[in-house]
Length: 312
Image (cartoon, rainbow, N blue to C red; front, top):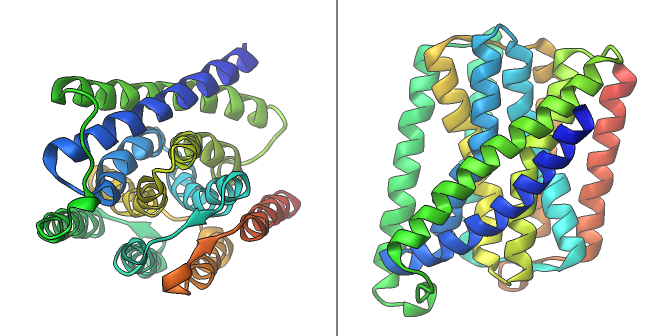
């Protein structure tokens, strides 16, 4: 039965990721918002929904290691695995505005998480701070996009679907992502638990991989369609949402204990991967995540997964 859950979850995630990209690109045209911001806000929130459901459920049921590990592991997988695999399939050209503001916000959110977690707990006020900062980030992204689009019509797209159909696709796709991730994680975690793996290792590996599949599905679909702003915005935006929205809302509902190993080991891998991404896209005029860079990311991800299992 566990393998049926895995297959069903994978199919739901793949189909929903494709529908989410289609609906989001169409919404960008209707609201005259750039594809980059749609990727950061709409697609990122939709593909981060599985992480939110898993982390909130885990925290409420007394499994804080899953709540935290899911977010950290997913952020690592989004860059090292999702971006890496997609770049191997199709090299990704990165626009200047994809990194200047959003990458900095992603890194600052990660540093803030580390600072908040030094007492090994995220409480209500830390969560509230994350949510307020997330609101400011969304407002700034949309405001800047609409302001720049007044003089740059190329940043918007003509909608191919009606407003109602576009919105319906996004809603249905997001629901499909949630249930797809739930089925996949249920099957994967059940199989992993049967061989005696603890919550932290399950969460940063199996569960994080399962909840990152929406990003993988949506990103590969966007890359194939050459919606590169959606792709880059989705990856960075999803990581921002994972920290600010998921940990923010979850810790506001119930304080989350932070496993010391997260601060001693996992978070430094996340910082290192974020910095490597910046180095790889540093040549702003001709920044490209090439196939060899994608391969480096995937190898790093494999090494990380290997080491956490060796530690156990």
